Image (cartoon, rainbow, N blue to C red; front, side, top):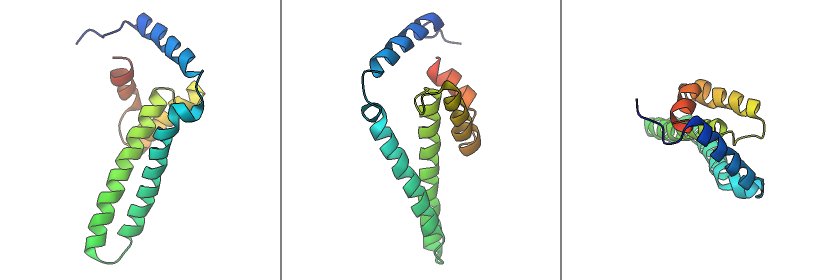
Length: 120
């Protein structure tokens, strides 16, 4: 197993410094684009379902492709934001959303993702 770039203690110190800096900015400037794209993916998911419900096979294929793309994007965005404790202000809320987007929606372990992306 590789050595982490930062020790757990240095990571915690860096994380606190970043959090203090982020508190100086509005929620919109911190997360605006991420949530704009999240909302667009939700609309795209809905559009994919509407396309899929059309009777011709081409619409079934196109709807499946669009819905799959949006489904994956929602899973990654939701898991990423929540496991970085950035989706909501509450740590507990972020953990629960991480389980929803990672384990339920995306079918991947949010704990594994946290351990290998956030902490490594």
